[in-house]
Length: 176
Image (cartoon, rainbow, N blue to C red; front, side, top):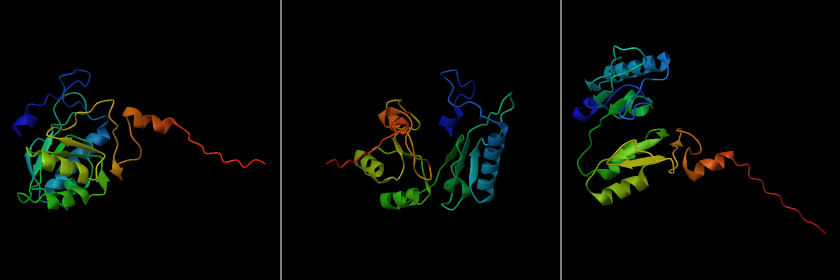
């Protein structure tokens, strides 16, 4: 929560901004409803989750704890500033992986650990197009970005993205 409080919310063209406005009113309202529904289903809102009092569609990042696996916030993709924190049994890596992979989505995931072996295991086993280790949302234009399962088809960025613009054809001719 202390780190979230440090995030600069503002002009997306300012490099020091961590989060800009939502792109339209309907999405902002959906995110606010998303937080309300998560709380109604038992999650605890420990920070944020409100519209900021300024011009534009700005939302204070929400931090939700005590989020059960069947909670709306654990199941749906918000595409907004909502952090979901779920607890797990210490050392139960396989259980965590099973829970993480049980969703129908798989855009990105994050692993925070000091154990490089756990980081590598989780990176391999997580069914997500991107895995961040000890960081989140740091991307490079040379790295492909795209999800698995219901989180999209194909990749953006990187050399793999060029395949989306190609039209591959196979021609087989038998000639006598």
